[in-house]
Image (cartoon, rainbow, N blue to C red; front, side, top):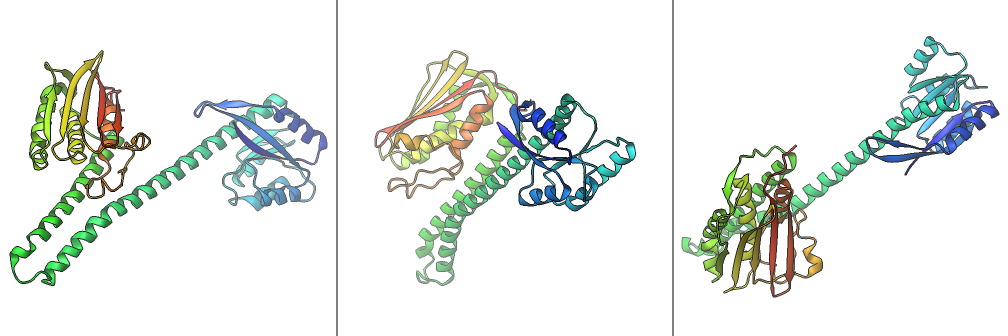
Length: 378
């Protein structure tokens, strides 16, 4: 429950007590956030006392009498105008007139309440102002979360690009300084390493663009009838050259065509990411098996490998952005840390999911479930 502080400022003890009694147990739910709101009441009997309390800790709402001994309510408004933008002021006066309301509004009052008022009228006015305060607080929280996410994203991105850039720079300095001698052939390995690093950065940028398009809903989609079994076969064919380098066997298990309405590029992206990972994190002479099938209204894709595997507690982290499990076994394996996050986001477009079962040194199996009728992108 969100508890808002109200400072009731009035020189009449009876009115302060009545306001506190009317609001102390008052609760309501903000429809937009489904959050219950309650109140903690504080009081002040003069404008000077109110200013002191506001200066120490600004309340969320200020219920301010127009006629006060010493500083008037309008004087208080003049003193606080612009200093506490998150606090809303409701002016209370026995002289209900358009002129007074206009003057109070110009000086920063949010609303106007005329004496005498009933508890119901007071609660209605407070509810309207509190609703605005709660929504403004939520907007600020979301904005702060967005700033933190953006900061974290840029920080991680900078870290991910820094290592390959440093490596390429070092290789180029070796070439520029002829560190390996005058023979061009001596630099072949240096050039190859540079190209591998550059390809890794290109993959990172490509994955970032894919992820951004998916999250923003701006990725164009062409939903047609596709044979997932055929797409799986094509993914294995694309990965065959990389598999041969370490003697990895690729196998497809699918007895008959498995059709669904989907975006061909999205299914290819899911398969290519999973198969590529299964090869990269496998052992020499290992095996990758892709199984395509149905489970009711869902199409299932399972990619299993006989690779290095991971601890169960680490498996839960795999689908976060820029997440790569780093240890002695994975130290020299390049990747963007975005592939599995993209797979998860694509699965969600089909009201689906992706899960992993893995054991260290025994391999991993990633299973994707995709509903045959995709959920429309908002």
